[in-house]
Image (cartoon, rainbow, N blue to C red):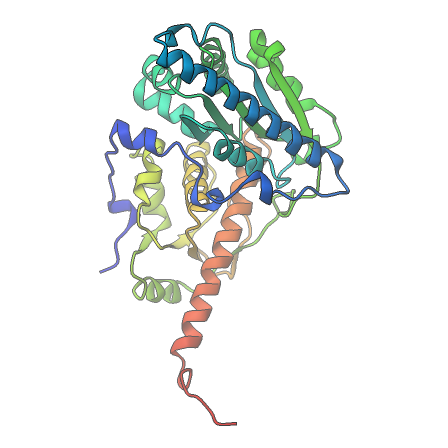
Length: 363
């Protein structure tokens, strides 16, 4: 019998939560050597060069710290506040590739997570315990720093300042909204204003370029007939099958920090009855789940509530005009990509099982 995400109630340990703070499978092999800057946008090459130098700088600090530790002077290693680097730019210009490459290039202990994963970690552990755990690292990488929630932004700003005061290097990325493109350092200025006393320690780099996904969020989430979705779920080992309403209700009962554990060993997620979401609470939880599915490259096979072949609008216009619109645009693009992958799997499976599919004809 096919399992359902709605039946999973993971209870990850502290060790598991911290162990998950690494680049996701989608970027596990990202390295500086494999980042190819677009010659039409010099800022990409400049960012690669600066990230390379930043990694070397942290590496030198680790070598010196190791020597002090061996001499019994490790407590003096972090008397100076660490500098940080912030990559600002539009969607799909390679910021995450550079950030994960930095993670892989730095020796010693380091952690990597999205803005949401860190806020969820603080929510699960408490601020001081999360700070103490993260402060053991040489480098903290924060992907997709978000400025749309004042409370979370101030929380993360405080966390960054206190990590920096303990000598931990911090690197962050953030997406500029589509309508903010061309406004120069708009997002960067907001970021520096929020982190206040740390602004003089943070180097901001703007990365320009073309997006490999559409910026306006007007993407089609490929949907299939409900019966086909259900039948395909029954043919795949490790597949899950959920009614959309049941899944939304379940997500409200599971802390977002556990969504990663909830999709452990899932090879393909199947959803039936997908409809437009009109609640911020439901939508924001769905965004986190889509991000975790995307990070782990889990295809999604969906059917729409009205039987349509595409989910034309996953979020209402009101949600897409709200302060959280950047998150919604990103999840639309990511879900569309995953649904396209899922539909391709269904098509390939049907072709393989069609009569005569394995028949070899002579020449």
